[in-house]
Image: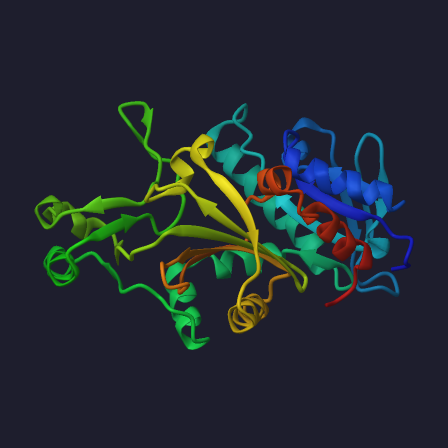
Length: 320
């Protein structure tokens, strides 16, 4: 890899946040190769790699209709919002076979590269996305974590609600879910003991004591740069109504900022978006980490140079 190598940006076609980063990279004169793994299905993405027959452990190319990049020259990879092909035009068995071989062929070749910086590596994103892991790590690092129960035992859930009174239910992971053809969003919702039925035993659910707050915080960390935004809404879950939100750029107490940077490092991630609550006494409570959380709308609302921070990190490349 040379310092003139390109940045690979893996994302879907309609990704305005990736567009912001690509513009910032272009302003720096950094070559960019943008692709979506789903392009394999359309015949517009080609990958070839050789192993064992050349001096490098892996050698080959990724080709799009407008760009060709040698794998050994990739400076960094921005793994933003890629989609894997589903091959709906094939018979079910053929589709499963093609989808698996695309994921383990294209994905495996990219994961085999040792030189580029990944923002973020998908395996590390996936590992950090487990809420129980996040809650335990946050407590180990001295962050204040609301009392939380994850269970599929209805009696345990009812007892937890009896202990804490005001309790909310949150999804363990954002998942597409429909009832009678209508999308059901995964908001944080209040839950009462009488709403707990034997159906809870089908799968673990997350219950959390509702903590008093005056505002929420979204904290984006890119490399070692930290951007903290206070979100005022009066809502339990501010994602319900973006039109009701107001934003204020804030500074975090150094111990809290340091703990969040350490948290990201423990996960092996280069970027991540943290959600926290702010109490009336200035206390902060950890809610969750979104390893690949959205941030583009916050830059537009506050003017914080978030895209520039991503471009700086990707331009630097190499192992961090």
